[in-house]
Length: 535
Ligand SMILES: CC(=O)SCCNC(=O)CCNC(=O)[C@H](O)C(C)(C)COP(=O)(O)OP(=O)(O)OC[C@H]1O[C@@H](n2cnc3c(N)ncnc32)[C@H](O)[C@@H]1OP(=O)(O)O
Ligand SMILES: O=CC(=O)O
Ligand SMILES: [Mg+2]
Image 1 (cartoon, rainbow, N blue to C red):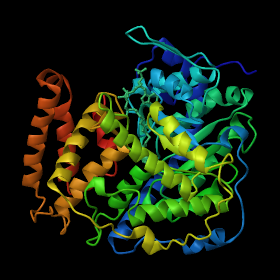
Image 2 (image 1 turned 120 degrees about the vertical axis):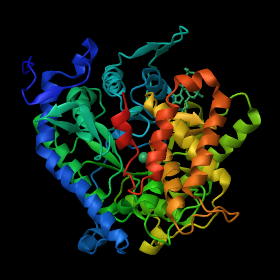
Image 3 (image 1 turned 90 degrees about the vertical axis):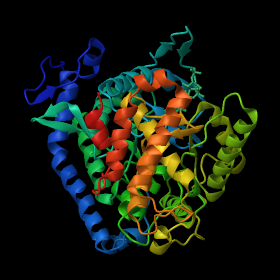
């Protein structure tokens, strides 16, 4: 056993508060490990972020995304990803939730789901407190030393049988500003991954599980290669067998949809398949194609999983994964249970049921749910349609998806209600995020960073797009947006009361929403300027 180091490396500086419990996570050895990752991989990460911008420029100049000619051989050749461990074979229901919320972590692990995806990303507002508390929660859950007592005295403890833990670090675009290496913020993905891996990999293996991850928002197989290089290095540093880490990649960007085979190939020693991250996917489709005069999305409520471009992307994901003998997990229906209204509740559950039924019949090997009450709903459906641990043997040779199919523009209408909804939901979400809540229920739907991105991106596009008109013929102008914003803020105030409104961060949230909407330069992620404002 090596002796722990007592001093931080001189090139590491910690800007966030260091409480006694935070110090247990931010040990000198753990930060030295994060610093090694940072020094080794930051440059390539920068290059890949620049590559995203280069591809955006190409699309703006008229070059549509397509399957890559230079990787055709990988798509055509026969190969498989390495087999996944026992506790990732059956993933019929996966619950997700913010890693920083201790009570929810216990609930999720106890929920009866096969997997809990503990989120440092879309569902987690990245305050310093949430981020480090998330690491504490993970460590304590893995050591089965996690409990929680609510202010009302309700006690929460782990059951004997719990879900397999999978952690989603932040995407490549984000920094963790509270820790600097060589005077620069640490890439947030490396921070989340590094601390989790350093503290828990060996215990997880000792417990018969392993260090498992979900990887978000990637736009190319080169980004997957970078994660694979990080995994190889991290395993070697901690003397953990190569191939131990398993990662499921979210296909949630339009560009990654063209590189599913290549992404699996890059990670083939470390892959646990793909997942269809539908909300970011819609956002990414809109974002990357935003400057094309032929591409416009109708109201958010009309961009469902059955519109052609969404349908083909999920079918292609199933086909690709099964051809490579690995899982393809479905996505998140936005409905959550409705309290005190049985009829509305039944309608919401019916929508979730229909969504899961489609996924199971399409060949997905499991799905996501946002709430513990939805675990049995999704489980019943997968139990009915998926007799074995997965349905990888359903190869879906009947699926034939072209580049045109993936890019097909959905038809529909833009309505005043849709505009109002985007503004209202976007502001309510950003307000919660600025207060440290990364997932919230609004109008009985789950909202997180990905869903809010759609709302603000749509308004941005409708204002600028020649076809950005309401169905009654009115143009979506800056004036109309400002008027709607004012009225929706009043409505929110009416609904939640003056006191809560004044105590909240609605001014800051509407300022940020307006900035994102009215600025001609499209902001890549709302969480980037949001993070600058986050206390
Ligand atoms: C696009 C994507 O990236 S999707 C993946 C990321 N998004 C998410 O993970 C969202 C997950 N879901 C949630 O965060 C929550 O369900 C919310 C915020 C939408 C709604 O939460 P609440 O308003 O607390 O719902 P509700 O009051 O019905 O919850 C009932 C109980 O279940 C718990 N609960 C609700 N959702 C979850 C969850 N996902 N995981 C664990 N526990 C949960 C609540 O903490 C509450 O516990 P309690 O009764 O002991 O106090
Ligand atoms: O991360 C999931 C998504 O839908 O986005
Ligand atoms: Mg997402």
